[in-house]
Amino acid sequence: MIEQYRGYEIKVYWSDIEMGYVFCVFSKDGEGIKESGAYFYEENAWLGAREAVDWLVEKSENGG
Image 1 (tube, rainbow, N blue to C red):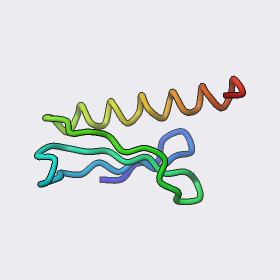
Image 2: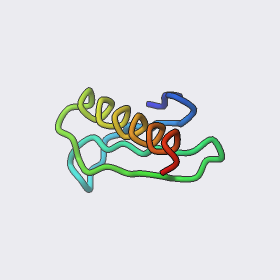
Image 3: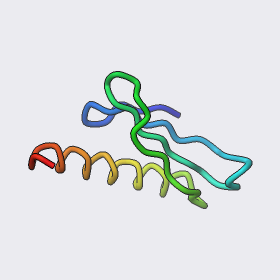
Image 4: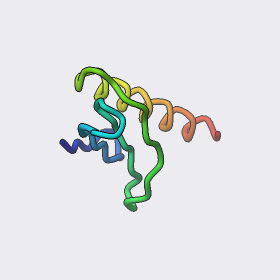
């Protein structure tokens, strides 16, 4: 599944290699910024992805 969140694109999918749900975060330009490890539940992968985006937004707002 794909979601737009705070100006970033999040993709969550099942990975046979990781044997769990993985998220990827992409910039507005489509550049891959972050990829997670495996999550047992899809809902947890979505929460982790949104937390990662929140951190990226906070970092950019604070000049980091």
